Amino acid sequence: MILLETTKLTRAYGGVVAVSEVDFQVREGLITGLIGPNGAGKTTLFNNMTGLDTPTSGKVHFNGIDITNHSAHKICRMGIARTFQNIRLFKELSVLENVMVGLHFTTGKSPVTGRIGAAFHSYLRAREEYELMHEQAMKWLNFFHLEAFADELAKNLPYGHQRELEIARALATSPTILFLDEPAAGMNPFETDSLMKTIRRIRDLDITVVLIEHDMKLVMNICDTITVLNYGQNIAQGTPTEIRHNPKVIEAYLGKEEA
Image (cartoon, rainbow, N blue to C red; front, side, top):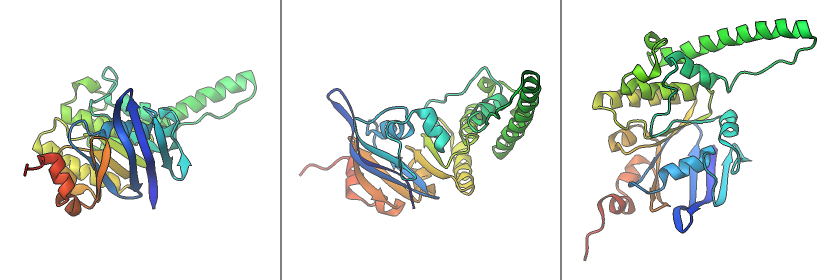
């Protein structure tokens, strides 16, 4: 089943076309890779699918619903979460508080009547919500083995743990699709191997994963399907084996030998 797709999506900045008529599909339950040389338009496409930018033309559909002009927070509430190439944590908040921020997208408010009753109900409701959010946040910290750092400031975490925390915060929004923008950037080989296992565990939670990544070992080992962009255009889509042997992909990365 196609969970998310773009149709002839184009994003131009003045005379510069960053993404040109890209058709991109994300199938439910798979790990989809989006790769390409630097400047190929990968993050621009991510931004246009997650509401951080608006296409110049074309459409984005999620679960059959047109979300092309929806805001980022509305798209997040619909079930699309993401991380960023440059880590965007609330560094002066604790590790636990960072995850609880993500949980605010899933909490609701109950209508109450009467001033005294409303005040008392609001207090109980707030306390109940806090306890539930605390429990859920700790669940995600346990998932990443970060529970021992719950009260530590986010800025004090090692780099690899900061990456994991950002993913934990995104997962706290209860997404159907998780977009990861270069999750292995800056990681050492041990951290990258751990990340691959984590991404598989996330997929096993019935969360569809889409990732931009330059680490070809990671991409080829965990992705079910891969789309390749070059100069803002979709030049190939297929399995890792198909992509590895695709002449257009080889040319995009290695260049073409002159006659």
